[in-house]
Image (cartoon, rainbow, N blue to C red; front, side, top):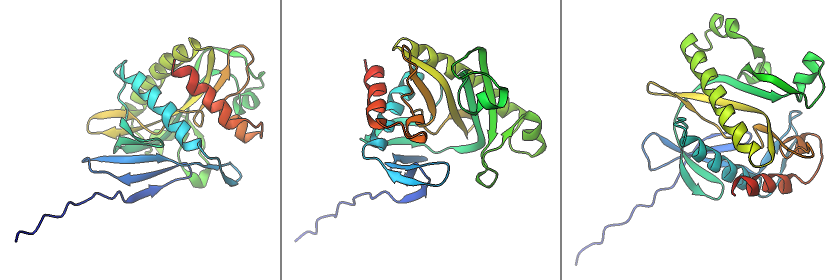
Amino acid sequence: MTRKNKVQIFTPELVFEGNNKKFYTSEEENCLIMKFKDTITLRDGTVFKMKGHGELRNKISTILFEYLHNFNILTHYIKPVDESSMLVRKLNMIPIKVVVRNIAAGNFCDRFGIEKGRVLDQPVIELYYKNNTSHYPFVNEYHVYALHISTPEEIAMITRMASKINAILRSFFERRDLKFVDARFEFGVLGDDIVLGDEISPRTCRIWDKETNEPLDFERVRFNMGNVKESYSEILRRISI
């Protein structure tokens, strides 16, 4: 009587959990499963859940990552795993958040005393140090080099990539009657390459309706405007066409 070999079923293990996402081990070497959470965390620490929030961000990010691949933009995205998860490459993240602004909004208006909605003559690129204890301070290249946060080569590459990604996505959204107001990008190192990581969704981008300037992004959560799920769904509907 022969003993049948047992089939081993892979069970992903939690590697890291942040405010908005969970990362799990995967069967693919040097890859992780990135799961988008329904949990929403506000700046004041308030946490609540919105059913479907993670699924919408995952679907929107999937479409945008796949679109960027057509332009030879290196990203950590590999493929969808399920409704709220994707398989991504494991990166050594650079602790810099790159913000690209096309239209004045948010604290940019407060800092420079200009009206919300003003179209900037050219995109503005800003760098923020990813340091939770310091609340992501605004930095320039001198800070970055003096504090050994990153290297001149990395900063040159991520700002160049951010500029190209912004131009591609701005045109993409424009054709769908949406304004790509600004966006936050994060990058990591994979071998000799700089790679776009994190997500591209209404959680990390300001996206307005072209005709009404109605925010369809995370501003609806931040300012208690309501219809968050409906707004995210409208973005998904338009970019799926």
